[in-house]
Length: 397
Image 1 (spheres, rainbow, N blue to C red):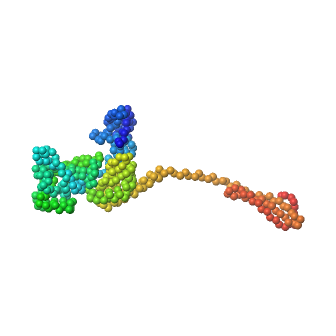
Image 2 (cartoon, helix red, strand yellow):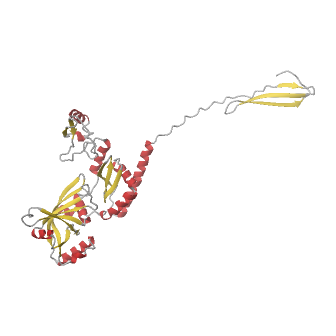
Image 3 (cartoon, helix red, strand yellow):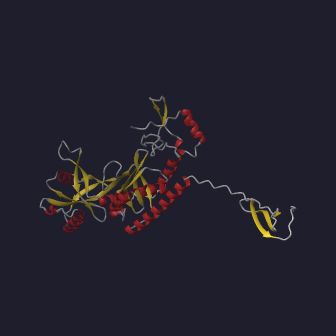
């Protein structure tokens, strides 16, 4: 069920704009729409053409939570691949795509026809195809080579995953050397494609790329021209990103959550790496029942597998240390015992009170009392002894 959005009256919105124009810039120029359920105005998203989402959502521009505000500022400056590099990388990783051609005949000539095809890309980023003469799209391209090719990211499951659409012209390769090179490149991606040597198959290539449209996930989309696309470079980490992400998600899920908090400042309940490049990670997080993707950048670029391991180990240690410090700060401190007062020792002299008593045979009995100072107080000691004396008296002194 969708969470009810925050409701703000026009007067409250005007006050918020006046009181906090700098702290909450998203309130300036905010649009509003009428809610028939609450009979009041509900603040809408600021950017024109943005998604209409609940103001409580982490992806809403109208969420004025301090943590979300800081998170948005971090994501705005997080380093990512350029659109051209990301397009080239997705095409290089792809193995199957949807090619849309113009159909033949009166019924299909004005409408595109989509087909799933296997492909590979050469070193310059041009897609290569092995097409059978019995396929409908092969005849379509022979009549009109203009088409588009949609390539999805590895493990594509939905609209939140990356994809790129190339628009250009596909032609049949006639040169023998080009056919040989195309076959080698194609078999690198499809080593079991023995059928490419069948007599009805021929080699095709998209030589002219007019442009590329990229959708990298939620809130990341753009387009590049053909020249810019060919100037892009394939990311060196993308080839082994899947095994790294699989290992981290299976064995270090808590660490990914800690890294997300430490690097991006966002508190999440779950995190899963869904993409990796030399500049950082694309992480799908779960926060308050919502799932969306965020960018977790590396501390420094990691151009190879060893560098990626070193960077991620350093980020893990920093995240664990920060989490331990945060937990220690929340832990209540024990009360320190009040210092004991030192008692002043008084100089006490020994006091003797002696009483002498005699017997008829000359024995003298002495009884004494002695007071001595100690740490736990004055202790009274009694002592009695006897001795033989020729002189005796009954007086007390």
